[in-house]
Length: 114
Ligand code: AMP
Ligand code: ZN
Image (cartoon, rainbow, N blue to C red; front, side, top):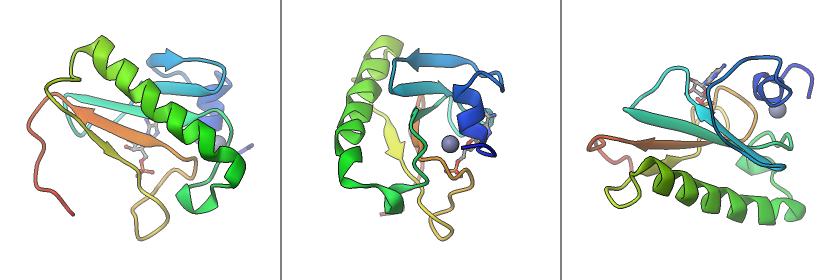
């Protein structure tokens, strides 16, 4: 998608510090980290948000969680714990309209919202 900042990152038009990449998924460090470790995991296919997922997207969502575990293991925070957050839409606080999974770790995370 042309004006999508994360699609531009996927195409290499905007530089990022990459954490993981395969043919379907990219992970990179958040530019404005909310924790010592703050990684964004995204599908390379442009999907706006959770509300716009289709049946054919179901496998990629499962794969994203496997990639998150792989990263957690490699970065050494799997046992200590981490938090995965997906904001969706305006009320969910989503600013970049390309589905992304925030992975936060490296400190005791604050108050739970739910
Ligand atoms: P959200 O509010 O859930 O849409 O989160 C968007 C996230 O993208 C924020 O945490 C931003 O800091 C992050 N972000 C925006 N632009 C970039 C970029 N160029 N590289 C890395 N992270 C970014
Ligand atoms: Zn996109």
